[in-house]
Image 1: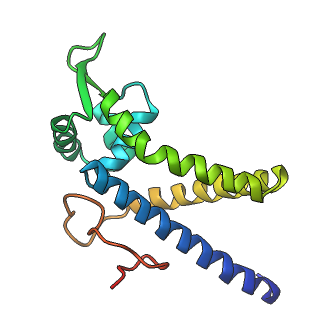
Image 2: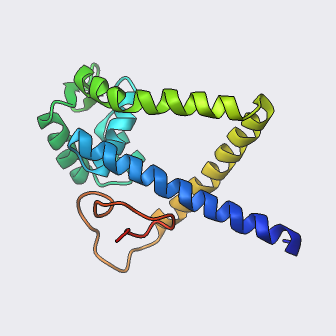
Image 3: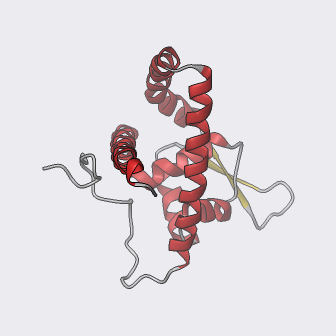
Length: 179
């Protein structure tokens, strides 16, 4: 990389870190208001994006063991956020689906943000700029997913943690806990 690109590389890196910290903060607050941890919230995101899904597919998407997924589904079912039904053709399998109440509660929190941010973004950027931004986000997401898979394949030097992704609380632009 040339030295003339270093300032933009640094600026872009800081912007991405800051954006990710803001997304993490938003997710933590959404999870708090939904009464779940961040992993449970991610599960709800997946459930709201699909009609129904097998617990084993959830485990794969979330990078969790099937035992952890079962405990998570028990918590979410107790809160009234999901239902489990027998698979229509395989009586040994179960399908999981978000309840209308879960969708209503989640969308009540998310819709104002989505509507307001869309209005502001579309007012600020041209269609061509938005195409470039969408391409950048898709491209970098693909890179992120490749490296996440590499990390999943590496053995951990420490025993696995249980529960949510990290301790609650606000993060600063670098992702560290704010004091």
